[in-house]
Amino acid sequence: MTSPHEPPLLFLDVDGTVVPFGGAAPPPVGSFAAADDPYATRCDPALGPRLAALPCRLVWATAWMHDANDELAPLLGLPRLPVVVWPEPTAVDALDERAGLHWKTRALVAWAAGRPFVWVDDELTDVDRAWVADRHPAPALLHHVDHALGLTDADFRALDAWLRGPRCGVGSAVRRGPGARDEVPGGLPRRPAAAEGEDAGDVLGEVV
Image 1 (cartoon, rainbow, N blue to C red):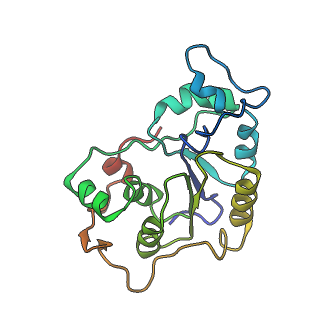
Image 2 (image 1 turned 90 degrees about the vertical axis):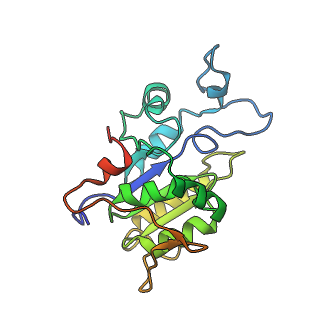
Image 3 (image 1 turned 30 degrees about the vertical axis):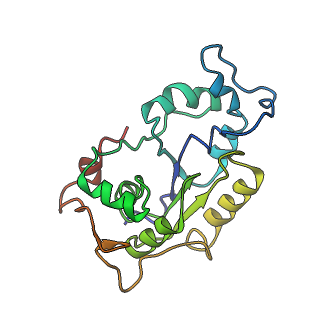
């Protein structure tokens, strides 16, 4: 666990979250428009100040990895953020997929290393929430975003309320229960955690 004065982490997805997949609506006024990247026109620069205003430590948790800092952070007016670099796939990942566990879930719980966190993503399910509740000792909020819309006013209100609430939120917080198991749903094995004296980043990849 970290100091109680350290802000909680916020793991931030990109596709369907910062960059919505959404319909035929035109991009918002002031959005980024690069001739070679029409997909990025869906990213609203106004999200940057709103994300920065949340009482947390922002961390990219996306398949974009370092590209999020290179391509999106300048657009959003954000500094370079820490990046979760995903571990190489193992046989456990195939078992997790069959059980319905998201491929990011194990890595983010290990990266958090017992700290309170929020995970904002458009692919979250109750399987992920149950897995985190069973294994993570601190409060955590797994917040699902509509991939067609991306982050909305309602999402920001929910995130801000949880982050400013008692012990980083109530109600939607999930905690490790007294009967924590070493399997994911379906009795699947748990990937080994970092050994004593070994940083979680050594298991999961670099942090920058």
